[in-house]
Image (cartoon, rainbow, N blue to C red; front, side, top):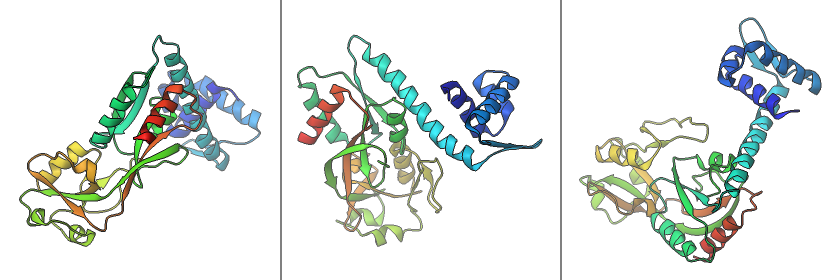
Length: 279
């Protein structure tokens, strides 16, 4: 099986339309169709069900789509990391969810910078649930995740710290003066529904709260009196003046971990992990 064949198949499987897949790949439709037919002959299975109206995946096609995505991501990651390793001063890319791990991130970068031979670290700010894709396709070498909110399946991790959570409220809200809250207090606010974060497949859970992707967007909605949220204590530090963070006693603890692809062999990644766990 060739990489080109996999790219062609994944495009068709995702678009479920040969014309759209050909346009996406920048090729004509006839050679695309021939390539998919040749791939099916070589594997000895039907990957697609074709009719005059639609294209659907067979069970074998569903399996190859999942496997193909992983293979193509690994190839892309290998290309990126190989090219970066050939530069005069290869650096590291650290993915961090925007607005989180501020103090820990600062301490980590400062401590790592004092290490002999420390590589330059580029911080890649991302949205919720993007870490895995960034690590998988080589756009990032290492990431800071917050469990149980961020997915860490398929990654190697080391725990760094565990903290409680806070509810972020408008400063003028009656509960903003409380020294502490419980989850029942937060969920019983019909005027401030809990915001809904995107899942890893970009879908949103059901609920009355607004859909959000980052803390900047979320804090603006809370200030307007349209939502609330329960987040790690560190993410609620240094809030804007019209917001208040109140500890939520029975909210589950959040553990920050440093994560990296299990196949990583970069010395700089190992050094950064060692510094992080030492902190």
